[in-house]
Image (cartoon, rainbow, N blue to C red; front, side, top):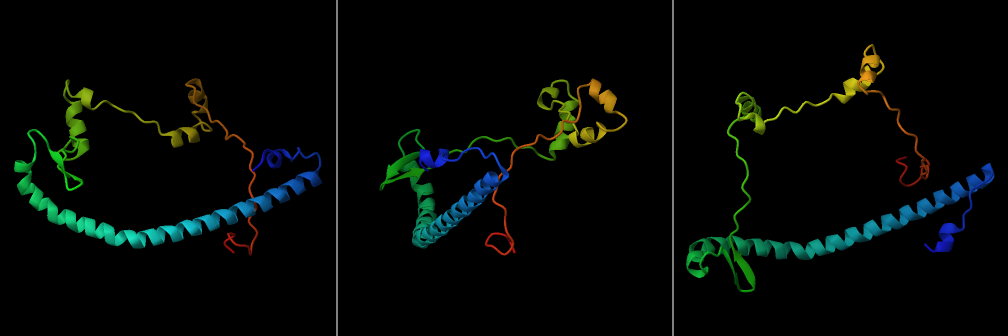
Length: 178
């Protein structure tokens, strides 16, 4: 979009000017939607063609991996340099990698939290995390506790109004669902 196209519009001063400008907005939005739909259709076609070519390649790579892994398990010790877990071979990196250490908990997490909170040294691992029931508090701001809550700094903040401008869907048109 050129700078002149973006700046050629002036603020409307009449209902007719605003209506004409909004009609232009609706036309532009329809053109934008059509271009995006065409782009998405072309991308889908390109992806389908690429997938058709990729599927046999990925399947063969997976099959090679399944066959090489058991061989590697047996051959790694004699092929790997000292203290190494992988190496380059045949244009590939082959080896093993140790995953990240993760916490394992036997039983339910709630049971562990309960046990830790009873131990003086365990409280650091399971701190109390109170959580506000915001839905109940919002409802209470218009009830008998509203004044008490206001003293604590809890009030209902009305939603902010924001400007909305979008093309209206017309029944019987593409994208209207009718």
